[in-house]
Image 1 (cartoon, rainbow, N blue to C red):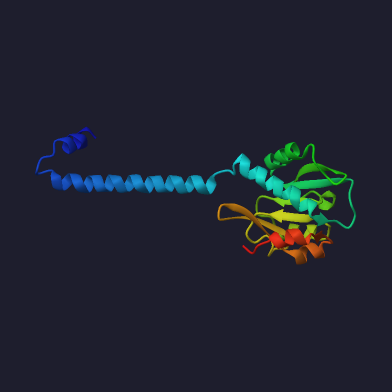
Image 2: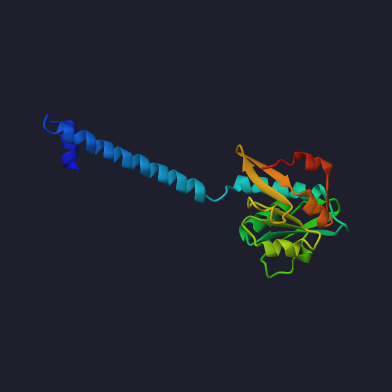
Length: 191
């Protein structure tokens, strides 16, 4: 390395043809490394606390603009295999109600019978079998997988133009016995 710096600071005419290609290769490696690190960091970065709070606010409003066959005394929010997000919801919803009903939050997996849930949030891909299983109940399913509504889910949350958007599969909601407000349906956009 010291030789390289000495050649840069004290270039000899005989060394000029060697220095430029060496610097060009080093510069390309640096740029390639920076691009790989930036891409890796973007692809694998955990959602920020602010992003999770925005998702939590969406989930709260989804339940406010949905009607169930029977009005429960407690709305049960279920989070599929994401204990961290379930804890955040517990904190954010601790003093909130939906009408007269309080809110309870539970972290679940596929082995749990989902009939106590009014809303299930999926932050990851879920099996089609489990989505079909929950479609037998009046459960508002919300997911972030791009094939969520195609697989039978009701609301697909996605990012577009650096904003959180949602698409509602109203046919799936109706099949589950849920009525989604026309106000919310107007905000639904095709991904």
